[in-house]
Image (cartoon, rainbow over all chains, first blue to last red; front, side):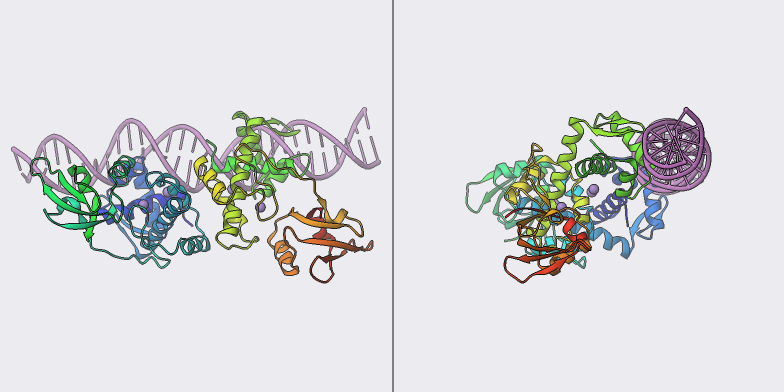
Length: 218
Length: 218
DNA sequence: TTCGTGGATTAGACAAGCCTAAATATCGTC
DNA sequence: GACGATATTTAGGCTTGTCTAATCCACGAA
Ligand SMILES: [Mn+2]
Ligand SMILES: [Mn+2]
Ligand SMILES: [Mn+2]
Ligand SMILES: [Mn+2]
C-alpha cells in the first residue's frame, strides 16, 4: 500500500514522462509544490518499492508495476472529475483539487462501480483519456491547434493544460470539448489565429491558447 | 484545518459521547485501533485547538466548535454511505470502510452538491440521521427492540451497531430499515424474541440482535 | 482510611515527510 | 579540456503521529 505522498510522486513521474521525455527532480518538486531534496528522498523510496528505476543524476523510469499503479491513480482521478462534472454539476475548472483528494481512496469495487455508474466514459471533462480497469487507454492521434494550417476543419479533443484561467477563458469563448471549428487565418506576427466555430461567428485566439488545444480532424 | 487523524479522534469522541455518557481514552483507542497513550497526545492537541476540553484523569467534553466539526464529519460519512448504497449498489454492510476514507475529503461545495444529488436524505442506510449543512439533526424518539413488550407493533428505525456480521444476518432474515413487525413473545430464559414481520411468517431473534435494533411505533 | 487495581498520563524512542544548507555531478561554453 | 551555471543529492534537523515502558491517579473494597 502506498501513502498519499508516494502516490502523488508516482503520478507526477508518470504524467511528466507522458508529457515530455523525462521527469526531472526539479519538475516533480515544482508540480507537487515541494523541494527537490524531498523528491530525491521519495524517488529512493519508490525505487526500493520497485515502482521505478532511479539512476542518480540521470533520471527516472517507471517499472511495469509503477506504471500500472500510476494508471490506476489516473483512472480514479479522471473518473471522479467526470462524476463531479456530469453528476454534481461542477464546472470543469473546479474539479481538479477535489479529484486530487478523491483519487487516493483506493477500493477497486468503488472505482469499478463508479466507472459503470458513469457509463464507462472514455474521456474526462478535459478530454483526457480514462484508463480502463486493466490500465488500457484509448489512444487517439491529436495535434495542437497552433500547428494547424489555414482552412483546416477540426474538433477540439482535449485541453492539455487544465489551468483554471485557461478553462474559464475557453468557457467565455464558447470553446468546449467536441466543438468543431475552421482555421481561417494564422497571423505570423504573434501566432494568433482566427477561428470560426461551426455555429457562430469568427474570433481570434492567442498562440498561448491554441498551443494548449489538442484537436483531431473533424 | 484538521489532519485525518485529528478528525478520526474528534469523531470518535463525538460518537462515544453520543452513545454513552463519557468518552474514555481507552475506548477511543480501542475504536481507532491505536494505543491509549497516543490518544492522550491527540486529546491534548485537540484541546489546544479549542475543539474539546480535556480534564486529565477525568474526561473530555466537546466545545461548540468541536461538536460542529464532528457533525460535519458525520454528515459527510453518512452522505457517502448513502451514495454508495443508493447510487452505486453497495450492500449496507460494505460501505463503512470506504466512507471512513471519503469523509475526510472536505469541500463544502462537494458535500452540499452530493446532499442535493441524493435528495437531501434524512437518514443513512443504517437508519442514522444525517446532519444538514448547519449540523442540525432530525431527532426521533426510538427505543431498542429488546425493550419492547408482547403485542407491540413497531417499525425498524436504525441499527445501532453496524458490524458486518449483524448486517448480513439482518439481510438474511429480511429485516430492513422501515420493516414493520409485531412482537409475539418474549422468552425470559434467554431474552430471545419471536417477531412477525408484516408480510411474512414469524421467527425468532436473539437478545444480541434485538438489543441493536432501534425501533419506533409503527 | 488505607490499598490495590486498572485506567490515564508522561517519558523517551522511532519512522515518515518535509525543510535548509552544503556538497557533488552534469553539461554547454569558451 | 577547464569553468561555471544549474540540477541533484547528501547531511542534518524539525514536526507529526505512533509505540512501549514507566509513572501517576481515582475509586471501590476492606
Ligand atoms: Mn493527489
Ligand atoms: Mn482532467
Ligand atoms: Mn475516517
Ligand atoms: Mn452508517
